Image (cartoon, rainbow, N blue to C red; front, side, top):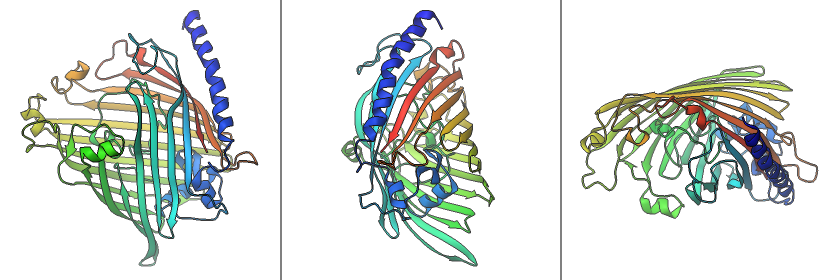
Length: 446
């Protein structure tokens, strides 16, 4: 890094530091705006999270039981908010300004993302997690309905074993999942709005919240075995407009089944989950086409695992997942959009987190995507393959996980630095390091 670049980086970090401090200070200024789950249960954030948003066994149980557990004495409604303040530095400046007020490098964004949540118990057996998101990116500013999960749960006996059963209505596959291995909740947990990430991914990794709606039933037996079967269909373009989305150019034809099976034995301070998940869907690739009778057929098969050890002071979580996607591109091939009628994609993720006293988090993760060669299908990236690979390293400080200041006990914050490096991006390995990105952030919950 040259002396001039270093000087520019430090000069831009100074105003960011003021924003980070101000972000946390502002969060302490409203007693009624605090994380609703913590208020409802009377527990500190560390009960449900090793370092938010990573869940502990207690946090997973809270979600599986429909967000209904009580224990706190707060009379406030189940509303919460989050703000992400961010500074982004690229290894090489962009060739031109991306617009929307962003410069070619060293962008400071006081509110890269802001969220309002309705999150908590509705009745004894009914709870909800509803997220409304303001996002600021190169493409503009948007407000939309984000991750949403409405649950009805109850309990009974399955032989001699206790069993929780429930119904989830949600708006993106895997948002209902309780492990940090499936697409919605996996690592990295935060990224720059201007990150030059892979342009392609498997079907399960590519859904936008609220572009589809799904419902399904699940059981959790003997605090050990989880099984779920759900089905998803696309929402109309009118409905997508109504919740703040730019309507998708593609859609699920009919209903698409999604399944999940996992086993998680626990012993002492440790747990190990081994699971599988998947989805099968017929996709209309172009809703503007004159003939929409043909569809592309996708089959995503995933396997995952998560090991977790949580001591009084130290905690370690290892996560890994693999998705194999089989594509039969009848419609796209017929429209001249692909060279091959059959293709495949493979996506691999793995990460390791160490958390000290629920306050300091260090995480390293690797990702890799590979697929069949198809020059026409991947013409938008000037490559015949979508292959990408890289590492994401994150270090964060969470000052309030065990409880906020005495005046505002439910305040939480995650202040950190994330560094993304690429060995390959969108089929290209030449000068790919130019896309390496540093993100400095403050993620405040109140």
